[in-house]
Amino acid sequence: EYFGGMTPPATTPWGDITESQEFYNGISMVNHDGEWALAVHQTIANHCLSEMAQEVAAGQENYLFYPLDACSIPVYELSASHPAMLEQIINEDSLVHTLCEDHPVYVTMHNLHVEEWGRIYDQPA
Image (cartoon, rainbow, N blue to C red; front, side):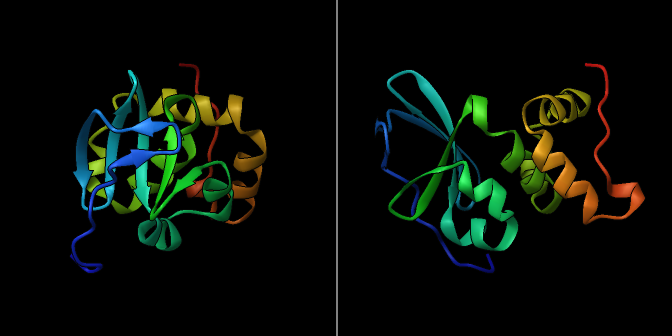
């Protein structure tokens, strides 16, 4: 609501969107040729995502796109500010484990900049 209405994306860097599910204004899961990706409007990304999260995205018009195998960082970060995104996380231990396994540099940088209670520690999942 703060940013106003954001037009959903119509295309991805990989092709036209054939199906979508909006989680929140400017945040959706989109399907292109049978492949799902997380779509985050650039305005939300600028206010809610770290530079590291933005760097791993593919951009198209006003959206950043994250294939399913590369969306753990934005899902983690958006879940802190968007309850609708938090509701999509089925197993937080699994998300944390994925971050630790696939993005150790991100975890290290995150842990350097947060208090002890907010740090990411690997969980068996």
